[in-house]
Image 1: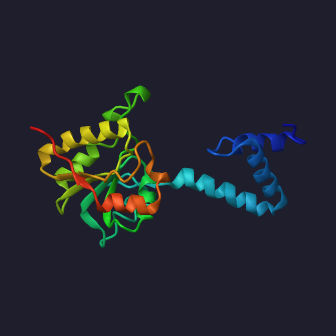
Image 2: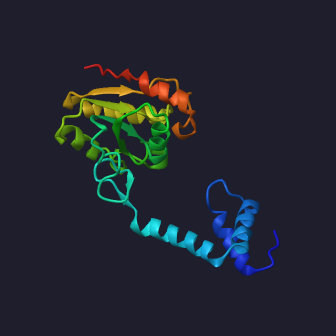
Image 3: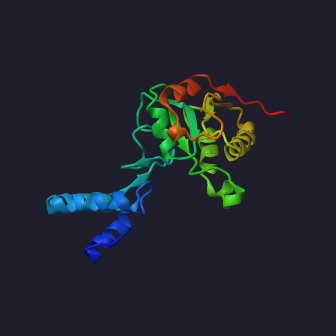
Length: 205
């Protein structure tokens, strides 16, 4: 692709690094910014800079936040005795969009995947165990809402074993979510039904 300006070429290169955006789409976005007032580009640049500089993570659940606690953890109307464990932020957004869940969350920051070099120590597992062991009011149930993949099942099994000594009920979302699918791309009705029809996980002694 030929560019009339090195500045446009550099901008297209950077924009096309974003997921799902190819060179042609990046070029359209760059030209759109050129057609608008300078203030539009400056506002976009400022918002991205502020995002990277000022974003925080909730000290309870590791959700993205503007302060020490996210809006969900700070909401007294949420059920703080019910924690839904997810791999990452898009899963929280997907479940929230169902309108079927009123508890809190815990974001692991990924799933156990030896092939990718991700073990339990790279995830927010210890903080989950601490929440179950020390939180007031006491946590009654942990919902494991992880992708129905081999890695997701491995992570769910590991968490179930780690939580077993704390005598907390551990459940998993129903398999209404297709095998191999990702939560953030699952339709809201299917995901909502999976939350409502979750099952208890039992571990043999």
